[in-house]
Image (cartoon, rainbow, N blue to C red; front, side, top):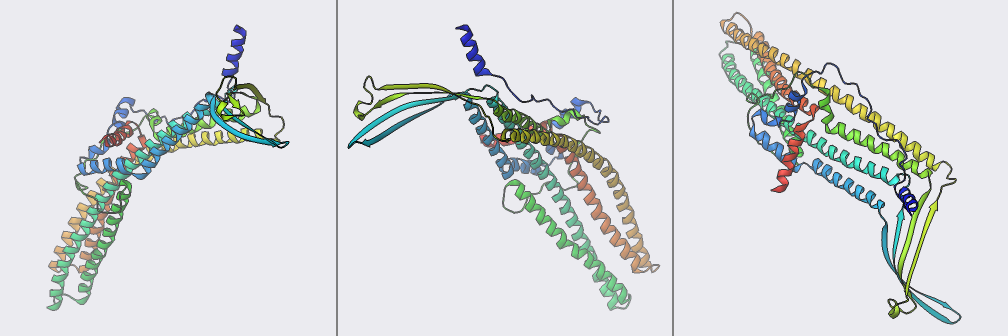
Length: 461
C-alpha cells in the first residue's frame, strides 16, 4: 500500500522540464557611487510637491485618477489575473454534468433512453506543463502590474513636464506682448518724428519692422500655449480645454537631486521589472513546449443514472459508473513539437535581449538627465549674464541714438538681441526644470508607489 501511494504521489507531482530562471548578469557603470539610502530616500519622495505649486499637485492627482492609458493598464492586470485563474484550474479535476435523452428505432420498435451523469477528467501534471504555465502566468501578472506602474511613472512625469513647459510658454508669451507694447509706443514716437521731419523714412521703416517682428511672435506663442493645454488635457483624460495656472516659471522651486545614482536603485524601475518578468514568462514557456515530447496521462470517470423510462431514472438499480485512464504519447508530428520548442527558445532569447536593452536604456536615460541638468544650469547662468549685458547694450544704444551719435540700426540690433535673449533664457529655464523631472523619472523608485496611492485614495472616495 505504501509503495502504491508513493507511485501515485510521483505520478501527481511528476517532474518539471525546461530551464529554471537565472537572472542575466548586467554590468553597471562604475562611476555611480552615491550612497544608496540617500538616493533611495530622495527617489521615494513625491517630488512634484517640491516645486511648491498646489495647482501642479492637483493636476497630478487628476491625471492619476482619470488618465485613460492608466485605466487600460489597470484592466490589463485584471486580464492576467484571469489567465492565472484559468491556468491553475488545470491542477484539479474538471467536473461537468450532463443529461442525454435519446431514442433508437429498429424492427418496428422505438426504444427510449435517458441518462444523467457527472463526469470528471484530470490531466496529471507529470512533466510540469501546468506548473510552467502557472509560472509564466504569475510572471505576466507581476509584469503587467509593473507595466501599470510604468504608465503611472510616465503620466506623472509628463503632466509635470507639460505643466512646467506651459508656464514657460506663458512667460515667453508675456515677453512677446510686453515687447510688442514697448515697440508700439516707440513706433508712435517715430511716426511723430517722421511727420515733423526729424527722422528719415528709413528709420521709420526700421521701427515698423521691429514692431512687426514682436507682433508676429504673439500668435505663434498663443498657438503653442493652446496646444500645450490640449496635451495636458489629454493626459488628464479630458477633452481639450483651458488648464489652471499656479506659480509662474520664476516662482517654481527646483527640486534637489543627487550628483549620481547607485545602479541598484534602477532595479525598482517599473519598465525594468516588467522586462524581467517577460523574460521569466518566456523562460517558463520553454518548459511548456518541451512537455509535449512526453506522454500525457488523463484520468476519467463518470457517475450517474440511466433508464429507458424517465420516471424511473432515479430509482434503485439505475445507477451507472465508469472509470478509466488515457495515455497519449506523440509519435510522429513531423517537427511540430520541435518547432514549438525552437519558437519558445527564440522568444526567450528575444526577451533576454530586450531585458538587457531596457537596463542599458535606463543607464543612458539617467546619464543623459544628469548631464542635461548640470549643463543646463551652466547654460542658464550664462544666459542670465547675457540678458543683463544685452539690457545695458540696449539702454546705451538708445542714449546714443537720442544724442545723435549713432543711427537707429544699432538700436534695432540691440532690441532684437535683447528680445531673443529673453526668450532663449526662459526656454533654457523651463528645459532645466523638465530635465530635473527626467532624473526622477529615470530613477523610478518609491515615488511611483507614492503616486499610485493617489489612485487608490481616489477610488475609496
